[in-house]
Image: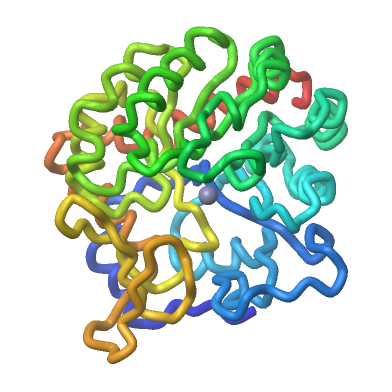
Length: 343
Ligand SMILES: [Zn+2]
């Protein structure tokens, strides 16, 4: 795998980010997987972003990128596999376990609502993982737009997470995402019904433009076991709002690598968002700049730029910045690992 990070990209690090970033970074949202997680002979669709990385994104691949992109940072992470229904969830959990030391690298299992509680439990304990991540693709009995949080997270799995104090990273469903009234109600209900589970709402509830976040963090802000991660949020206004309206000690930096290693930027357009792409991979709402009108850098740097701008506007102290980048996630995941007697 080639690390696609040029001198012009590194200039972003040197001139804009280096003085801002703390020494340690904990990325709480990374997808890592190797060939063992895929079915034999699997062919990725022609514009699948995994093809950029040779069809896998291992811990070594990720660290190669990070050593180039963030040459002066100590890097910690929480990873899970690639949430595709074609991938093996057991093999993914085994791979995640094989690279997790519960000191610097932590991991979660991918789970489907069809999985028996015994198989979920085995995936987690046998591989010494600190929690799990459901995904809406695994809910196959409903139209995508009608899926609810409780479809993704059966009660039995949540009771298991609650009893053991596990973390659950949740990518919320439904077209209106954070602003959806069913989500709003179920997000709070989930946190209250399972107070010892740590619920991490990924991508700030997938709110990538301002109108999607304003007024919609109050419910979960009041739940002490609710966290948000910033994965793929490029919008400084959304981040600034979160820094002002959500308890800062429960905000975790995350990137969504390997997607974050593509060239592009998520932009707000007329109360919607799109991924303007510098390379022709099909992710979410992608618009490819085929004429190369602008020169893109990596989403990862765009995310860091946005956090920097938002931190400045929300007047975060340097201790708060360090906690969002490192301390909050490190404490959370280390405490879970200690409780599970992994360390
Ligand atoms: Zn993700």
